[in-house]
Length: 117
Image (cartoon, rainbow, N blue to C red; front, side):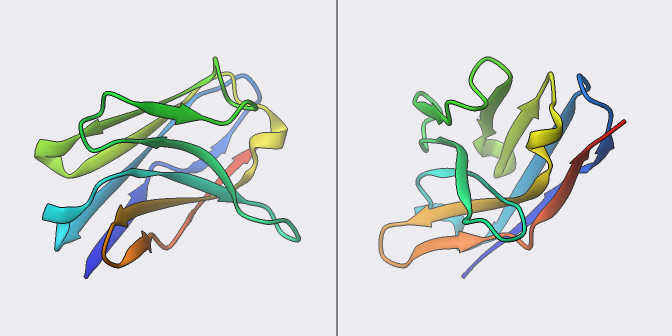
């Protein structure tokens, strides 16, 4: 089993920044890709960003390119999502995930990000 705990969400004004963190624990030695999805009520969960185990390859949704950055610190079993120039449409519950080949995705509990003046 893998446990994921997110932190860093909250309320921010448009144009502001937040950094989300996700710490993995448990059977983490076989985790490969990690990343973030987000979901608003009534909509499907959408991929925001992901990063390979080495950290060398990242993938960002078109809607966040140029504003968000994903990074990973394997020594701390942590993945980060730096969110800059936030817009009201970024408001959502953000979920961290970790992928393991044999068992698929593990999910965090989700953390609220609200962008509003």
